[in-house]
Image (cartoon, rainbow, N blue to C red; front, top):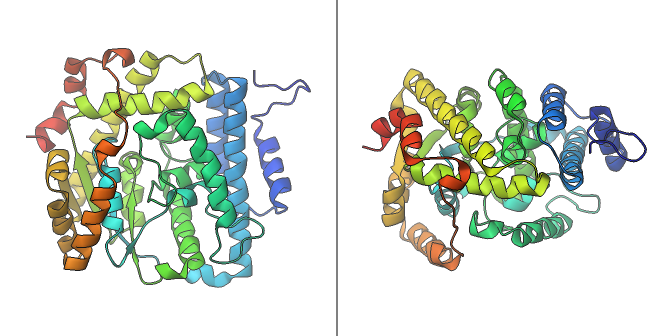
Length: 388
């Protein structure tokens, strides 16, 4: 299924790069470290992912879109070298297992005065389209709306509360550098995942900082604000993340993996099915559970070496029961008082985004080949330390 009627492989790296150059009318991709992880991912996609014709088209289109954004960004930096001089202040990075309340807390913190975050539509297209001037985003927002329609049709809204203008994960942008956990949440690519365990993603984090500078330069209302980032995927790359954002407080959200892991498996399997009808839920479920258990082990070991001063722990139950109190505690750590204005803004956001307003998300352990006993064993060290 990887060849067209003309015999051309649609997942050929050179062909994808050439098509991106043609679409953008540009040829400078900036630092080319991404070519290695891109090649590894394409090889795994061919050999393991069992992509359908639709899945191949989706993945190829996603890659070209990300490469076009990269071309446009580095072209903009050539024309406006002041972009590279922007000062980016990342105040906090939220991570933890998926499905631990981190999305809610990310969005809650970002509404506080003096903070900013990457909006969902920006994760899809961080570089302006032709016809958009500095500070303009009307064409990219329209493109984001079309992507969002596809998520709605696929039933994704009950699993993750996608919203055009709400903050979302920077891992979506790092995916466009072919580094991070996003590829394996859309395709079954175990060889790429294994290789990624050996890869140093520090250059991808440098590119992420460049994107933050670019977004900050585009939107002058962000000047002087501090960034709040969030993605569970940082657990897999914790050393480089800590080095990239040396002044950031790391907020780790905690919840019983028996609840979180099968929920996350349900989410990613919904995406995998868009790309392949041949990968079954048990294969994805068991692979995913072991993968995230390994991430947590790596994260905990690194955390012990770094020391606990940079970390704040939040239990999911406390976050759901008293989100404003948890926000107050974190803001204090960031040197910000919970003023009446901030509290009112946060309370209004919580009211407008109550979980009850979304459809329920249904899943079982069994459909992903998981058992409670097995998950308790895989995550026993994590549970003993953080979920007492």
